Image (cartoon, rainbow, N blue to C red; front, side, top):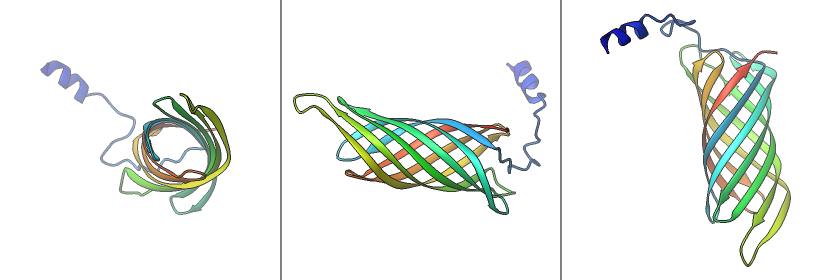
Length: 168
């Protein structure tokens, strides 16, 4: 056990965690999240998303155009959602944490089972999300997001995920 700890402590990381600069924007990021959503019912939520750096909005602040596909499901009801958003993301020199704001627009397709089963296509919804990311590695961040969507039915969601970052 002690030998294993000595070997792990001698592994050389590509960045010194005490002196590294966590500001490492990338041109493309792809991620997956899991969480929960609430309307009049509670749902399990799975999400995949991709973003592309669109512009810089100042010192350590970047804009990303991103898209998300979500599936909300529970008790025979399934909601498929697709959205496009604009993410304003801020990086700090002295912290591994950073906030972001993401307004979005999209559409959803609800499928209900049971005696009152059916399908509903909502051609438009909008919302906004506040989130934070935590730097893990130059190629990966953790992401926590709390959002509110509005449409024929409003919903609140909370997701936790991993983002992989790539350069073009």
